[in-house]
Image (cartoon, rainbow, N blue to C red):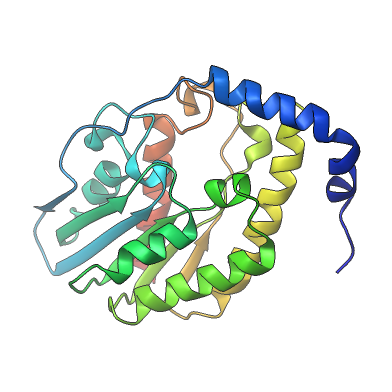
Length: 234
């Protein structure tokens, strides 16, 4: 596989990228995970066991409560059609490997699931090949021992559009995020239960949380609406 331009330019740009990365970490506004329940039962209709798993975005960072986060909006939409028994298994900073380890210790069965991962894999330097291997293992756990029959795999975010990231750091991370997402799409096509969800949100400041790194409640609402549509169509 040919080396991409951003991978070549990382070497001469390394001092700048290192300085920018340090500055971003030093000045980052650290938002907490939102308050509120991480499991519950909502709605009426056919029984639906739902699992939401992943990193800080799955956990709802950027929202004040879980009701304003991905879990709240997604459960609210699905509860119009199902009696939803839901569970949130997500933690700030988690990579794909962290999530695999977490879910291997999880008991119970689920009908539907949503994953949100990739940003921490990008910042930890995970290669596309390794990411594909790990995502394949993750989807195997979800559709195997956890019994998931309908799965939405959220695409790796377009990190070049994160307001908190300066250039050229945003460009370099954005290109790597795009490579991992191409791998993720490849993995999703190999599982008949899975649907890849690419979130192409408009450039609207209202869609970003105050830290410039996470979604806002408005973005979570859009995300949940798209995910619910895919889950019901599956």
